[in-house]
Image (cartoon, rainbow, N blue to C red; front, side, top):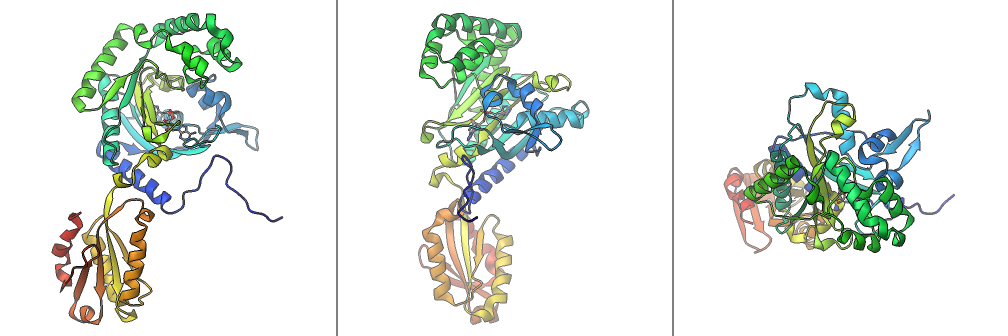
Length: 432
Ligand code: HAM
């Protein structure tokens, strides 16, 4: 058999350039989240199917029709994770969450799988970067994750994003809201498809997940979640808004954000980007105060979010990317290769975050410089902006005199100095 094999529908490869962009975004997430005390968690890519049925919810689109579920060789039903919150909670309960000091602050990055109709921004294997904060009941927990989220987005160059915020009633108030929603929709149910009529009877909140314009039109006049909040929920929602204003997080309130997963209680939020077209939700999250208990742990309030990393990277403008100094170290001939490697190592230690490429072919300055020019013509190759681009030229004179010649590739200006002065001279790394 011959013929070319293709990646499965709805998956995409990350070749260099793309892979570097993703790695840079993940490195930024690690830096920001760890500075707030969040530790990384990695859970299995597949879990028992029951986990998602009990958390995300039997009647959600995700569990109902989007999961990659298969029996293993012993007939156990397994599912490729469609999201990571359930796995994180399962892992914590299994590790003994009651003995873990609270709050518990975690973040993760990894692939998720949903059998959806692929289109721009919607994949069957996609990547999420997420955060979960467990053990904080009050709105300060919601405010912490949102403020940290916006700090992260700001670091990536997103300045104008706004969170859309809602509060979903819990307990008896949620049941009352569901009934009111059913009463509003039932007289008009004749114009809905079979799928939405199922939602109406089984789990009316899920009507908000419908993509049918008719369902959306009917919901426009529907009762608002915000009119059904109990006193505690309302106070939580009001206080959260005060905290968000104090933290400088921009948001608008919208009763239409209900989120397609059943575990949410009270706060829910999404952030969308106009740059993305139809699949414009970059991230979603909210509070899930009942989930730990429903998965066998002690009552534990919790809140978190997950960012669609593929969408985030797609929304990043080229010039919103991090700028990094790029330095080409070019030996004049093979005789200077050892010296070039030693100088590269010193520069690497002196200029953290710089990209240093050593010309290992050692075919001389003209060839080395033209290779540098070729690289600079395609800066996107690196996944970030090149700044302070320099060539370090090392000929026989430099080697013998323990000197370096540094050429600024933007201005053509060239200077020679002692190798020992590299540290001061490479203050250039800051002159972006
Ligand atoms: P979610 O809204 O289902 O929430 O997914 C979060 C984000 O993942 C979405 O906003 C979107 O950017 C991205 N995403 C979802 N499906 C796809 C897809 N097929 N292709 C590309 N990107 C996609 C959750 O998953 C919750 N676990 C979030 C959370 C964490 N809530 C509390 N903690």
